[in-house]
Length: 134
Image (cartoon, rainbow, N blue to C red):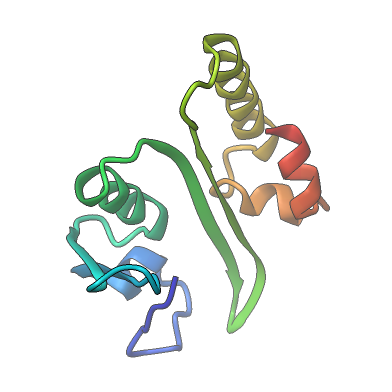
């Protein structure tokens, strides 16, 4: 994911205010493809995770659980991370239910003060810890 914010001095500004409206554009290329794949959707919320999730659903018809968050303290990013969980073909119903339960637990462990998964990182969790929870 690559993005640009015109004013890097966010201060107390929420990330959705800094990002604002625009588009999510994805270009995929493969040596065996005659042309690159181009996908585009509107940025409706200014939240990276929600807008990328909408792109995946609308442009690529892929359903997933996606979370991304940052915690900014002044000009310093003190926590940032995210995850994408996608159901693969032939996945059992039991596995889907277990992953859904695990994702609910991650939200509870994260707490309500910070967006998932920034709260987990601020409390000392590593990317491997989050992967293990899922």
